[in-house]
Length: 398
Image (cartoon, rainbow, N blue to C red; front, side):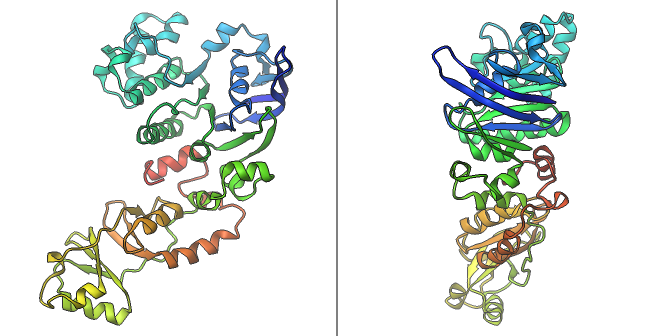
């Protein structure tokens, strides 16, 4: 456990970077420090490994004041990941990863073996071990940076905006990878970001810092989105926080319609009759394996020769699907909004269609959960922790 006890950092010119910070970082959890520029989040993180020393208060790890420890020794016991990975350009990937174990006196063979184990753990191929940083993509370099931080199996991992320098697609993949690793390793992680979406996705708890380094609120992502402490926090998390909060409610309780599903070998006449009986403007066409092909409009059926099968028609795309068992209401809403038919397609884990839900029906489900302060732990989308949520959903769709 990491504890900040009345921690202040004031520089000689009078600038206060961190002001009377009291914060507990639980063991085995990911705590995200979030705030705008000048909020002291990076300064607070660097006080943990004594890259910065406080001018007041103290920082402890498992009850031991970090100022009582030799800085180089302390830093070798703490993993540290920064922007741009910070790799040594003249060393191979394997040697970069083995840096701390070698400093700790590990034999070269043991350090190399550990490096190859970690390459696999962070999702890189064995041949990457012999390459140099300039031969890797930005995302691969960040993975190596994470592997290097984990090399000596430290209990604490500090991450200072590690994914901010890569493109959004790579960033999302790295976030998912971190969640997967945390579900397996259960490190005590302090993660700095200015991105509230990243904080909500990764954090078991989020500490929002004001400009000037004062703590505004610390809470679980669910609680932070549901109950911002004041106008500053509400403004920081964004006025679309209600949509973000839907990430914590599971989609598996949605009432999916199966009566609007038709197969590709049915005729336009059969489908048209069904649409009129249901009073539905859209029907979902699936193949023989019950996988989605697209939507067909009732008005299009009326203008089509009745003997034609649905598989021969130009269907309207379905956007993307959501997985009923693991995805959230936010994923379902996103699928409905992006669907040309205004309807989300829910699928089973194997990709077969379970049913469909319209935006209006989603609205009723969202209204039903809107009054809850927080979803029950056993009923959140994927589990009570960020890492367990990711492990349960496979990192998809959120």
